[in-house]
Amino acid sequence: MTGKSRIPCEGKDLPPCTTAETTVISPGEKAALRKTLAAARKALDPVQKQQWDARICANVLAWWDAGKPGHIGVYWPLAGEPDLHPAYAALARAGVRLALPVVHQKDAALGFAHWEPGEAMVRDRMGVAVPQLLRPVERPQTLMIPCLGFNRHGYRLGYGGGYYDRTLAPHPRPLTLGIAYALAAASFADDPHDVALDLIITEQS
Ligand SMILES: Nc1nc2c(c(=O)[nH]1)N(C=O)[C@@H](CNc1ccc(C(=O)N[C@@H](CCC(=O)O)C(=O)O)cc1)CN2
Ligand SMILES: Nc1ncnc2c1ncn2[C@@H]1O[C@H](COP(=O)(O)OP(=O)(O)OP(=O)(O)O)[C@@H](O)[C@H]1O
Image 1 (cartoon, rainbow, N blue to C red):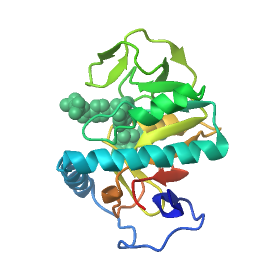
Image 2 (cartoon, rainbow, N blue to C red):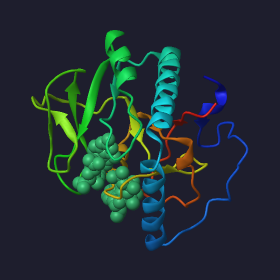
Image 3 (cartoon, protein in one colour):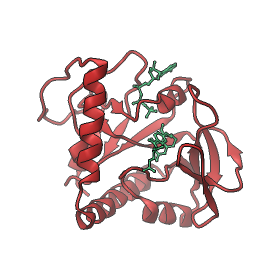
């Protein structure tokens, strides 16, 4: 990977801004932005998507190698999110404990459950895959978080449930690694409850 594919956030050597300055948008415009970004991601050519997923996996593993965190909250991909299963398998082989997010309750923080690649999964009410045998764990110190969109300050746009925002609110904050395709870069103002991600990894080289 190259340094460019990791986008450092919160004023740490920000790369040159290639988009317009962060813009305040109305809730209606935010909803429209979510729709546009989701459509762009879903329209990706499957072969292209696989290549980008492989690059993101390589970038994630290079990032892991630098700090070797022992417990990581990952995600099971939905709605065209980058599929990083090969990286998860490599992390598990390296002895990293993995956890998946679990929605226990609407309007609440996410829970986390221990997960090993290959174990039996079921879909929850929201259509998200979770381990059939739920083994709750504490919030990992390091979280990989899928982004529908992200802005140049490292703020994330999700599906609008506020689950990750609530999860990140309590201190001490975990180390957060946003995962997205570069096409998810967008211009929007952060809300007061938004917490900037520490780093965003894309396929970009
Ligand atoms: N991969 C992943 N897991 C996650 C999140 C996420 O953003 N991504 N979440 C972050 O908060 C929580 C769940 N949030 C969700 C937000 C929206 C939908 C949703 O729109 N589901 C569609 C089906 C999508 C599909 O399977 O393609 C639906 O119910 O119609 C599901 C879960 C916890 N797990
Ligand atoms: N820390 C928090 N405490 C209480 N409510 C919150 C908190 N963070 C976000 N919310 C609420 O959650 C709702 C959705 O927030 P936002 O639009 O930022 O979602 P999102 O980050 O795109 O979604 P998600 O995190 O689920 O992917 C907002 O109405 C907001 O008021």
